[in-house]
Amino acid sequence: MVSRRIYFVIAVVMFIVFFLFQASAVTIEMWNDYDTNPYVKDVNELPGKSDAYRADAQGEDAVNRMAVYIGDTENNIGNMVQAWALYSKHFLKTYDSFAAFGRSEDARTKNFDSMMVIIDPGGINWEEASAVQNLEAYVQSGMNLVFCRLPDVDVLEKNTPLQQLLGIRGITAKTTTVAGVHLYEGFLLGGEIIYKAADAEEERKKQDMDLTFPWYRLTSGTRVYMKGVPADESVQSEDFPPVIWEKRSENASVFVVNGSYMEDVTGLGLLSAMEAKTKDYTIYPIVNAQNLVVANYPGLAVENDREIMRRYSKSMDQVMRDVIWPTLVEAQSRSSLGFSCMMAPQFDYADKNEPDQDMLIYYMKLLNEQSAEAGISLINVSKTSVTRKLAADEAFMQKALADYRFTSVYAGKEDEDVMTAALQQEFLKDARTVVADYDGSNEILGYVTETATEQRTIANGLKYTYRQDFRTKSLETALGYSSVLVDVMQVAYPQDKSDDTWKDISENLGLDLQYYWKNFQMFSPTTVSECDERIRSFLTADYKDRQEGNTIHLDISGNQGTTWFILRINGNTIKEVDGGEWERIEANAFLIKADQAHIAIALQPVKGSNYIYEE
Image (cartoon, rainbow, N blue to C red):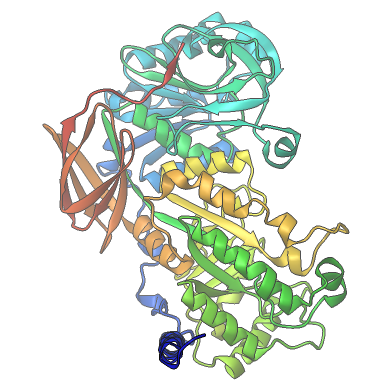
């Protein structure tokens, strides 16, 4: 039996606990400034499109950061190379054919050590014996060559000198299909990985790498960065068909890509990784931003109830609140990505169902508690024009949160005209960045208007595949940037007749965000407006670097505030950084934060190096 004294003590303790709980809840409520957007700035005072840096044909860039492209500038490879030059601040000269390059002054320059010549083999007439002879002479003179793809296997079979130039000693098969692909460490950032499915289910969901290509045998001393993994387990690893390799001579390197990996933004990181292999060190600016973009959520009107009830036995608002929200919070907490929600007040603007003001405030509070940004989506299912949609959204926001101003917009697959029309609306006068879906184009960061940036998502968080991960590693290498899209529209308005629910759709979301980004946690988690600020800084920055003894000096201009860089060095590590901070990404790769216009990076030797497979 409990005495009165003990009973009194228990009652007092329970009251204190209750009081503290209530007090904390009240405090959180009081401090939750959900009704204001901290990212609002005068867009006309931010660096604009006209402020973006372009390499100068007459300046030091034309000497120290010059690259040459030979091939069609209008095809996928040509577009990728031009985007790489833009982002890496290289001055790029282009020639539509190898013959045109041979007649140029660039072919006779003595500054080959600073030049990388990027080649689409379609720009070379392989019937001319002098083509390979001239290429070999350039390599012997110190010019680094990159073959973005290989000539047709029949052309290679008949051209022994070309095989020798590329480091090929024979052809095992004109075509082979492998079970997976092995990427070795020390090339792209993110470490070693084998893109090979463990079972049929994983194969169906994730395997979309380029698995069919010619099978070449390489000469000794060739360094291989990626190989195919045959289904035949009796094949020894040294005999696996190579995908990306480097033939190193005394004076320069020839890099080769056997497949289609240079035809989209994946090529940006491949070129950056290749350049890093040709120098004692390379340093280049990056964005340093990691985004998780949840689009078309939550939907604040009662819509599509029959289909939602069929799949979930719940209403739309219950599914959004009780089913989807907990998964999003759990997945984001396991990742190293910042959280942005591109809100859809409603999906169907042709019906009479209006969004709920109380539900808006509820979600705005939840987002604020998660340090997430609230943006606005341009997408709807009723094919309502963007101007009419935004007018309806503005009227709703005026009733619910009159003072809230959006700084970010989600455009999905909408074209630039729709984006521009949206940004011209008074409702979006403070919008500074537009998030769009990846569409295969190579300029994933830039400006959509003079005052608003564009940033594209690069991965689908609900259907993350091997090819997407390879693209992610490449863009982390080139730009220190990734942006993962989770589009809730497929839950609100499913396009199939299956019984799939959010549980089925989001099954791997949390695990994928945790596993595939585990080696990029040194990069900053950002909301899309925070990412916008870093994009502007990245695009406006210019820099010059030089090495004096064991110190790398870096001079930064064109940008005010912090600039981020990746430094890749061979045989050394960082001792200290004067004027900034540093963090190791992995062996021989470092993240540099430059807080001043001049920084000095002191190096010291390190024993050993990262492993690269050699034939």
